[in-house]
Image 1 (cartoon, helix red, strand yellow):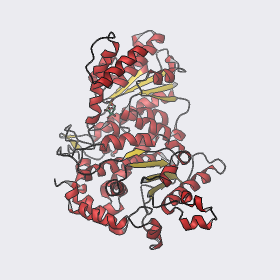
Image 2: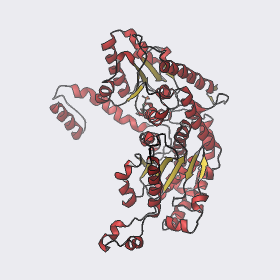
Image 3: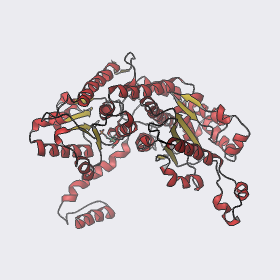
Length: 539
Ligand code: F6P
C-alpha cells in the first residue's frame, strides 16, 4: 500500500489545510448564515451538529475522498462479513455479530456464528432472571443481594460504564459492584460491607489468565470460603464469563456456570457479549436487548449511509483532520449527563488501546501521527477544572459534547441550567470574544489581552432526546466505528494490543525479586534495581 502521506487525497488535504487554517469559524458562519442548519443530521436518534468545525464543503469532499482512496467501503464489509482483519492474531472481528438479529448469517471458518450468539444471550437471560427474581439462591439458601464483577480492561470498563449509564433502569435492591485493580484496596473496600451468603461473583476474563483478575478472584474465593467453609459453596457464588473453559474449570467454577464468547470479540469490544452479564443482571434482559438494538441500529447506519452522511465516518475523518493536519494531540469527550461519568474512561481503552499504534498492517512505520489522547469528564464539572485550557490555552483540543433533551431526574431548573451550559460552551469555543468586544465592555486596557477569547476551537455536539438503552447502544457503536474508520485510514490494526505485553512480562520477572532476600543480585538498569532495593528497605 502507498504510504499514507504520499496518497493523492492526503496531499490534496495538506494543501487544502493551509487555506483553511487562516479562516475563523466566525467567518465561516457569517459567510454562510444557514451553516448551522445545513450541516447537522440525525442518525439512530442522535442529532449530530458538526457545523462548529474548521471545515468547508471542500474539506468534507476531500476527507470523503481520502476515505474512498483508503478503501473504507471494502474494509467495512470485510469486518461485518467476518474476514480475518485482525491479521496479527489471525482473527475475525465480529463484535457487530453480537447484536445481529437472529435471522442474519455471519460465517467464520464455515460456521454461522449468529445462532451461537443468541444461544449465549438466552442462557444469560435465564440466569439474570433467576438472580433478579431471587430464584438463584446462595449456598445457605438466601437470595443474591450483591453481584461483584471481577475483571479489568475490556472486562470491566464497558460493563461498569453501562451499569452507571443505565442506572435509571436498574434493579436497586441488588448492589452491583466492580472490582478491577490488583491493588488489594479495591477488593477490600468493595467486599467490606457485603455478606458472603448473599454475594455472587462474576469472574469476567476473556483469557482467564489476566494477573489482576485472577488475583482478585482468588481473594474473593478465600473471602467466601472463610465464611461458608465448604468448597461446594463455590458453585452457588461464582460464575465465569470467558473464552477459556479449561482455565475456568481449573479455577473450580462449574462449566455449567460459565458464559462463553469467542476469539473474534476483542476485549474492548466485548461489553455486549456475555461480558455484559453484570449489566444484564442490573437492568434485566429486556433493557439489555434494547441496548443491543441501539448498537445494531448504528451498525446498519455505518454499513449503509453514504460517507458524507455517515456519523462514525465523519467523526473519524474530523478527528484525523485535527490530529494530522492541525497537530492536535488530544481529544476531549465531555458528556453533559452524570450517568455517563464513566464514558470517557471507557473510550480511553476503546480508542487508545485500538489505535495507539506505530506500524501499518504491513509492519512499516506509519508516516503520520495516529490516535489522539482521549480524555474527558462530565459537564458541568469540567468547566470548573480544565476548560480554561481548552478556551485560552495554547493547544488545539477538539471536543465532543454529548447531551440529552430530557433528564431522567427533572428536578427544578437543573436540566435547563445544564443544557444552557453545554450550548454556551460550544458557542464560546467557536466564536470566542474579540479584543473589540472586550474593549466595548469597558475593560481596563491592561486586562484586555487576558479577557480575549480567540475562539475558532472546534467541537461536535451529539444530542439525543434521552439517555435510553437504545441511545446508549448507538453511542457506543458510534465510537467503535469511529475507531475502526480511523484505523483503516491510517492503515493500522485496531484489534491487537501488543503494547501491553512488555510491562506484563517485566512485572512477572520482578514479582519474585520483591520477595528475594535483600542483597540478592538484580540485573535491571540501575534505576529499576535501586527502586526495588529502596522498596524492600521501606517495607
Ligand atoms: O492488558 C490488556 C488486556 O488484554 C485488554 O485488551 C483486555 O481488555 C484486558 O487486558 C483484560 O483481559 P481479559 O478479559 O482476558 O482478562
